Image 1 (cartoon, helix red, strand yellow):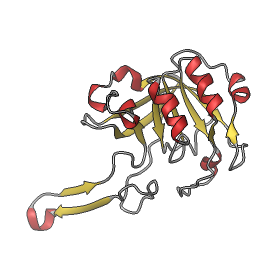
Image 2 (tube, one colour; image 1 turned 45 degrees about the horizontal axis):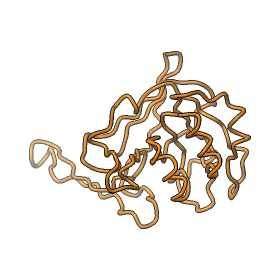
Image 3 (tube, one colour; image 1 turned 180 degrees about the vertical axis):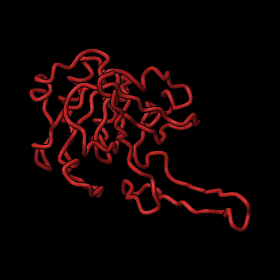
Image 4 (spheres, helix red, strand yellow; image 1 turned 120 degrees about the horizontal axis):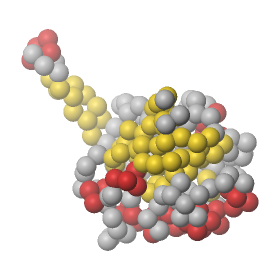
Length: 204
């Protein structure tokens, strides 16, 4: 069994989605002077590798604190779309070749994974609306991607209204396409989103 950590490192200068609060991490107690170390941090709930729930796009949707945890783990397919150019979208035709099954967790490895830079690009590769509808029809459990957003608001709404969880800003740089077991557990927090520690397990 091999475990891959696909979580982005949270650090003070990490780039965030435009308009989101930045990350503030600083030490408030020091072992030398205080006898122990203590760090304070603040950030938005959609910073770094994180999970969106239906409450993100609805007043009455399920939030992190009431989320069934079985939705946050399961059989997973990493699909390589690094050949798709920036500004282009992933289509249903491309997805139909991937043998997607009910309750799969689908992770898109895009051109964003071909570099270690983590800069926001408005032209990042994402599924188009018809591709999102296809994945809803296939009754997948969750969708994930390697950059800041799974797509425009209509894509978010399509997934989340159908209770398909959305993982964003995953680190798939060193991950090959194929089948894995995915775990992406959020903090137990009363909110619409949460940072996660996301891992893939191979040969499970």
